[in-house]
Structures are given as structure tokens and as C-alpha cells.
Length: 304
Image (cartoon, rainbow, N blue to C red):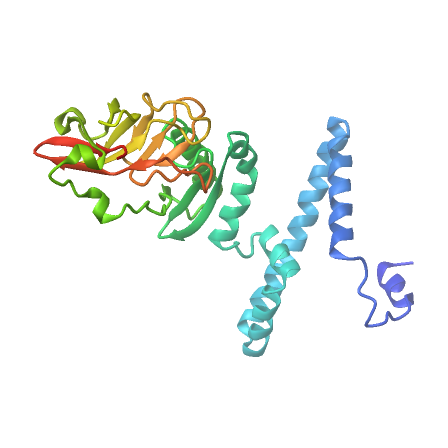
């Protein structure tokens, strides 16, 4: 019996009988691919050639259908509706008839590298793609950290540029921290600074841009404080010298002026250098102290 005779002999199917589900078909494909991979070389080469030949026939038929439908005004509208169907879109994408939008392609690529990012305590968020540039944010324990951002950036950039034809470069966006606000009155130095808890810390010239200095201060009342003074783009900020993670000192913290971050040298916790907000663990915060520069000297308020 020929294929045509076999087809004609089949009873008409109900319109409600849609056949195997897409998930069932996809499972069968996966199982077949695994079975082919387990074959000996000669048999696997034959199976691979059969797969390529069948896919070539399918693609040629689909291309013809798409061309005919695009050429007919009424059919063109139906074609656009069909492309919106996830299964049809996937089928067209597999055969190279349409390309997924760059955001879909990029997110698919990032799924593959995400386990490596997460193994470093980090993650990545794709924000947008404009004119071939993918804008991303690094998240988690590696967000903006100078000790690991280069490695993570290279990993993400290589994956996106290699995996998505329309992406030519990657731009890492900084996290937008919530600044710590200090009351204006706490910055004023009166006629008796000591009575108000202000202590002269060091000359401002000793904290050049992109550096930090650790100092031990003692208020007139005997209160002592270990403080770090940080300079990012000539903006000075003072913090209690304790990482919000385990309270370890930040004397040797790494400043990344490009990202405006301060990274703890012990466990890599990363902070916004000008606000003290922890970028690795949202909600954590360095304790910021009021700071004032007067006549070239840095004053820090450590208590009353």
C-alpha cells in the first residue's frame, strides 16, 4: 500500500484531536538525539546525515510556504498571526527562517553562563539592547566588585558577543544606590567643635582621589572610633571602619573609581563608596559619619 493509499484509508479525525502535545514531541526528539549520540560512529554518521537531509526538506517546504503567504495580501496577515504562536515561531527559528529578537537571544545565552556567575555568588540582569550594545547589571556578591568584575564582565561579554550576532559590545551599568542622608545640622561646626563631637582627623591632602585612609580618633569625652575616610572623584566620605558583613576592618579595601565602589578585602562584600550601601547584600550598610572639610583639614563627628 502506498503512502497516499494509507493516508486515504485513515478515518477522518475530529477537529478536537490535535495529536501529540508539543511537550511530547519535544521529548521524543530529545530521546532520539540521545539515542543517536550513543550509536557507533558509522551508524551515528548515517543518522546525522538523515537528520540533516530531513531538516533540509522541511526547511525548503517551509520557505516556500512563507514566500507564497507573504506574496498574498490576505495570507500575509495570517502568516504574521502564525508567527506569534510560540510553536510556529520556534519552528521558524530552528530552520533559520526568522531570527529571534536580540533580547530573547541574549537571555537564552545568559541562561548558559548564569551557573558560572552564581558559583561566584553573582548574577547578571539584561537591561536593554541599543544599537548593538547590550546593557547589563551585575548582581549579587560580585556586583561592581573590582576584584571580580573584570572576570565576570569578560565572561558575560564573550558569551553575548559570540552568541548574539546583533550584539557588538557590552556595557555594565552601575547599580543605583539609595544614598544615606545626613542631617544638615550635623555637618555644622560651631564655636566649640569638641563639645559637639567633632574631631580633626587628618589633612585632606593625605586622602587623594581614589584612595582611603584609616584613622583612629578619640573624642574629648573619651569615645574612640576607628574610621576610614574615602575619596571618590574628590568627594570625601567617612565610615566606621567595620565591614557590615562580619565587622572586619576595611583598611585594605579596594576602591574602584570607575564603578564608584568599595570592596571589602576579606570576603569581597561590595559597597557604594559614596553612600555606604551594600551592593552584595541589599539592606546592609556601612555606618556613615558626618564629615566636614575646614581649612584643608578633615573633621569627623564621632560623638558628643
